[in-house]
Structure formats: C-alpha cells, structure tokens
Image (cartoon, rainbow, N blue to C red; front, top):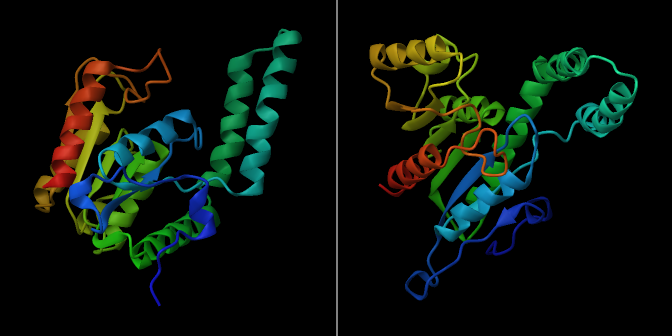
Length: 249
C-alpha cells in the first residue's frame, strides 16, 4: 500500500515543499532540522520554511519532549520575573537553571532516547512516497548540531549533514566513523576556536569529507534573524548559499 500521508507526529512542524510545475509528481529531497538549546522557536520554523521554499520537505522534530525539560522552560519566566523583583543576581539564577538542564541533556538516558527517536523520524521519512529516500539530509544548529554529527556517524543512509556552530564535545571516534559528507559553519567571534581546529586536523588525518567555514565577525547563532544581537546578515547569506550548493550537488 502506498504511503502518501505524513504520520500525525509530523504534522505540527512539517513544511511541505513549494513544487513548481516541472517538479510535479516527482519525489522530493528532505531535511531533518535539529533545533538549538532554546527548543523549537520562530527561528526554527523560519529555517524550515526557507528549505521548503527551496524545494525540500523540511521537518523540525521536537528534541525536548522530556517532561522534565518542559517543566524547566515553563518555570523560567516566573523565576526570572521573581528574581528581578527581589533584586537577585540573574546571572547566578541562569547558571543554576543551565546546570539543571544540562544534567538532563548530558545523561545517557536522554542521549540514547533522542538518538532512537531521530532514527525513527528518518525511517518514517524514508517510507513516505513523497520523499526521495536516497536524498535525506540533516541540518543541526548548536545543540542540534551534535546530534546531526552523531547521525552522520551512525548511519550511512543520510546523504549529507550541515552543522551550524554545533561541534562541541565531538570525539576522535566520532570523526573516525563519519560516513557521509559534512559541511560546517562557525563564527570566528566564538571562544571555542581550538575545538574547531582540532576537528579540522582530525578530519584531515582520517581523510573525512568534512568542510568547515569560519564566518568573519560572526557570533554564535549568527544565522538567527530573530535575534538582532547575534544575527549577521553577511555570514547568514554566505552560509545559506553554501548550504544549498552543498545539498544540491
């Protein structure tokens, strides 16, 4: 039986491509977009729409379905408002919240569960008659970038990966096991330049198809046009052009 409909779990954050007359009836390439530490935001949805406008089926799975994480995000506005009224140090409060959040995110249970869910998403995508099963790529932003790296390490049926400022905690073993081409973008104004250089050297050592661009005068999250403090139009336009060229070849 043909599979012509998206599973219900796809529907909330799924962007179908804008098909031209020439592409009518053809299967479409797809991208799995993995969000930043802030979760699915307006920026995440805009990125998905950009890919849809470029002819891709773009889906943005929620990696933060864990109820403990949802509770932290739900409580944050109230805690910060309370701290401001009481004149407390917001920096210290932010530190405590991050410690609580990262304790969950760095746990083996959360990592294993997330990878398992992402594998299910990819397998579901491949089953759709509207999707070209041989042309599914993964796009990761910051927090999501690590999972994009893991997927391209673990699977050989993902065509390509693009990672935006998300190369943290990448091990030598992960580099050695990369199976498919990968493109990365990183802001030169971030602090972890040594980490990026290490990855470049390891990619060269093991002859892996990893290309990394250092974007001039760019900060972390430079692609986020909803964040005026970090958005860099020049770097963003450059990264988008390179991304489409990379995926379309």
